[in-house]
Image 1 (cartoon, rainbow, N blue to C red):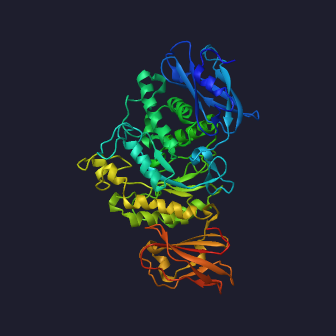
Image 2 (cartoon, helix red, strand yellow; image 1 turned 180 degrees about the horizontal axis):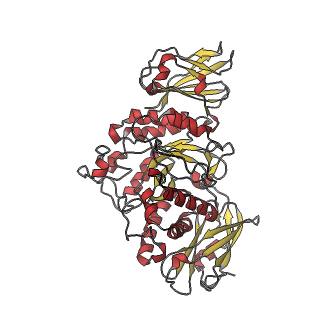
Image 3 (cartoon, rainbow, N blue to C red; image 1 turned 90 degrees about the vertical axis):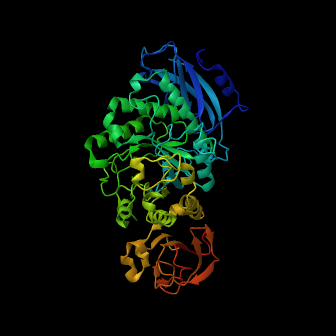
Length: 540
């Protein structure tokens, strides 16, 4: 029986079936009132045990929301009638202990893919890509907002005369451009000071901070943008005690774990290869796997590839590996080849390489970097724009440690860079194919003497002999003696050139394969192009 301390109106609404049934995969919130205000509420062990219609139990931590107020957020994973009961550490608070109730859940039926398919990412059985909760392949196209959420990236105001809300403008623009992910690290200056460091000492002012943060997660989720949440860069780990890190992450899981988000732990966890940072990261990875009832696929952001020793790659909690190709030019092919060959097999993602605007990196370089990574096995790509990864709020703003990477644009201009817009064409192209079945085939291409020039490296992905995707970098000659191996001899293939700048296909033609090494048609020009070759029966 639900106690009188439970939020009556919410439970009453949820008790009616089917008129007020809650949608599958979407977060619901239950409210509870403690018997008193506790001196260190974040240290109380309060959990909600949710029992599914099939008897399976999922345990979600509860969160303190100021004064005597407590909350539990939960996203049901299956339709039917669910029950819940609060569990409190012995003697902690009798008013919370034993609170219980039930609610009905209806099948998912949403235009938002995060709420239609389930936004708790999983590793596919092949170990090569991620899926939505229901197994639907998830194409990762991310943007980098490291210093969000914070006052550097407000949700209720804007430094641009064009936008009333900075954060909502960012979400709307990236959604329209076809992005599926935004990465945030709570790395900006925070108010009140220390809110992310000492949960044992949190006050009412700290709760106000988290209540403001709720708006970011809620808005992005409702718009269909999956948020990747971490906390700070590597030096944050230096300043935090292990007990506080666990309390902080328990609170993050409790407050945001019912939303379609995933966990990043921190940025550049192994910078300078400091053993203590690596140990704390491993501790948090194991802890998150223990307390997250959705067991969502999670990761940690590494240092640049020259210093990344991959300390977490064999950890049982690391579901997918991230790479940082850095900002000095095209990342070497070997880092992708080594990641693809890693055992045990795990998905990998190029997560930080050649942000647009850093060291004058332009759209051409950004496109080439992204296509090369995906062609080499990355299950998606994360873009970054100089002026947005660290938000710049006016054309005149100068920040030494940001300007040393090149002069950034103000955030609203950085949001509209050409390369960032063209990333949407990339996603649309791959999603027009069974992209999750494509495998890197570096052995399938013969480019002669040009193969020694890394700037002119041609990359191939294929699905058996039925489908081939060949990426040609800018500068590769329009006319060249380039051959492809592995196609079915004696069969016709439909060929088409895809323009990564406009997102359009040129007129298709037919090519009959008459030898094991087929001479490919000439490129339209010296710009970057993608050649698609498929058997007529292949879905496109």
